[in-house]
Length: 108
Image 1 (cartoon, one colour):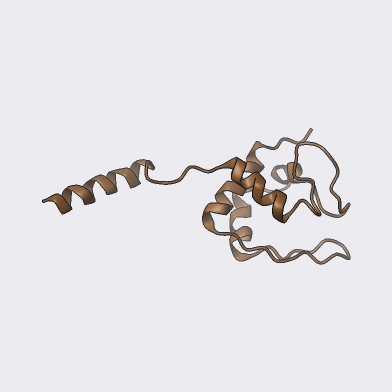
Image 2 (spheres, one colour; image 1 turned 90 degrees about the vertical axis):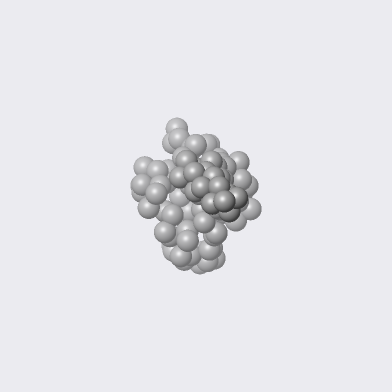
């Protein structure tokens, strides 16, 4: 009986989302600073160090952010004109955090 109660509680937590980690925009910010900022502007202002790399604050105007999830999961390999972009593959929780951070940016 104890086993069934535990399973029921866990199932309830999962269906309500209580057991799932929340998206963390701060963790997403840290990830993009560590992996992307050498080429892209990752803040709400400023120019990209690589002029061919679009600022992250413009991404939501170019693509629905949820469409970036698959690209981040499979590995982004798109290059910028004349510049090779390193391949990045992120874990699902990291992807959620990055998308959450991108959602906090607004193009000025």
